[in-house]
Image (cartoon, rainbow, N blue to C red; front, side, top):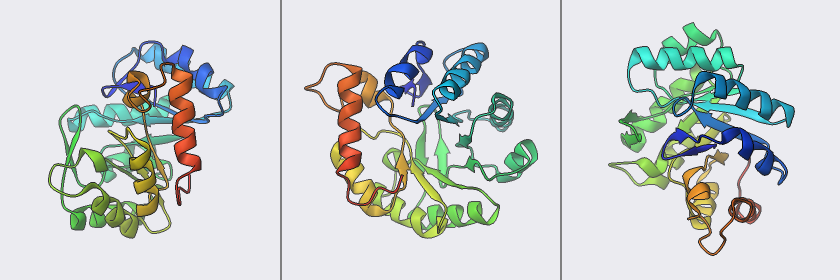
Amino acid sequence: MLTRQDRTIDDAEDVIDSVSDLGVRHIGFKDVGVPRATLERVVERIRARRGVCYLEVVSTTPEAVSASLAAGAALGVDCILGGTDLDTARRVLGTCAGYFPFPGRPAGHPTRLDGTPGEVERDARRARECGCGGVDLLAYRATEADPLALVRAARRGVGDGRLIVAGSVHSTEQIHALAAAGADAFTIGSAVFDGTFSPTKGSLRGQILAVLDACDSAPAMAG
């Protein structure tokens, strides 16, 4: 994710070329942090590098979420992550095949996640029943449950759908644990741009390569 502290970074356009040269093809951004015109150029740049484009919604009011969904549709992104209102998503997007809502009860910005494993499993199952491609789980933002218990619950609920884990992923150990618990993919942003994923490596290139190495050595990462 071209994001830091839950906001799209100012130089997102420039970073796309750097990460694409390293083989990264799944690239996303948040709906806050930069002007709409910048997001349009970001999408164009990702497309030019033959990447898959993601928008994660972090708006907090129903009206703002609806506007963010509409913006994602207008930008032509491949996948929209976040939000919880499935009826609004179907109305705005027409189809939910490329939509991955948050299960549980997200709140605030930066977003935290309230909810039990049972609630997460229920929400993930409902998302699939509504035609969503899967869910976007804020596992490591959990306030009242074990993150990996939430991942396993979401995996049960989502079935053969895609389970993406978002937020606060910052170590090889977490990536391996997520894979073993059933996650298909994860998002990472701040840990790369802060240099905290691999503190002994100072460059963006070094951070990205460390993340890719962690994925290569993960026990069961499907994505």
